[in-house]
Each structure stands twice: as structure tokens, then as C-alpha cells.
Image (spheres, rainbow, N blue to C red):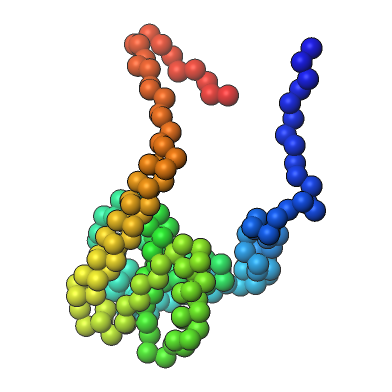
Length: 181
């Protein structure tokens, strides 16, 4: 009889400095559940009571067909509420209002960049004047971010190789689908 192979876990005392510590609060972030719930309530409030610039940009985004790169409104990422986010692109659109704190915004942008989300800022006055003029740099940022993701994917595939896909076998007319396990 052959011995069974089992998964061997490392001893926690043997961990090295380069492995990230497991964060046990706030759905993976270092935020308490109570605070995270308040942030989600605030995002819900902002969705219901949006600014005129936000409404105009949301209406413009609703007209576009971005495919899998769609934008969601007032999304919570960590402890930040972002105006519009496309997670597959890793791009957030932030509307700069007149009375906002710029140092806080820069700090938030830096923390979002550390998790792979690039923040693109658009002044609210530009959106209210002409939405189409405001959309041109957004489209340019989306294209640039898409190209960055594409080159990173190509570099990864050239370095590690792509995983071969299993060919699908054609079904015959008399075959029934087998239940999945």
C-alpha cells in the first residue's frame, strides 16, 4: 500500500517577511465590520442622492456599451467610496467637486494605486458644461489602461506560457447532457 500524500502546511513561525499577513477584518481589508457597514450605507446614500455632475456622467455611461469593462457607481474599495469603477480595467473615475480636500484625495489615490486601481480625475464643472468634452479624456484613459493590461498579459504569457485549453468534444444528437458533479 502506498502512503497517502497530504497537504503540508508551513509552521507560522517559519514565515518570511515577503509573505503578506492575513488580514482578518473587513472582508480582507484592515477595517472593522462596523466601519465597513457604515461605508456601504454612505455609498448607498450617495447613489440615491447623487450630484448633478455625477448624474450627467452616469447617464452618459449608461448610453455606452463597454462590454465587460462597464463602470459601477459609488463602489466601495477598501475604505474609499469611488464615483465610478471598472474592476476589469482597474480604472476609477473620480469627480472633483469644488469643496473637496485635495490632500485626502491624493492619499486615497496612492492607496488605490497600491492595489492596482488607477484613479482618473475629472472636474465637475467640465462635466456640467459638456459631457462629451469630459468623455474624451476618459476614453483615452480607458484605452491607455486597456493597452497596459494587454501588454502585461502578453509579458506574463511569454514568461510563463499560456495554459492550453481543453478542446470541446462535439455532442451527438442522441446524447444527453451528463449531470455535473
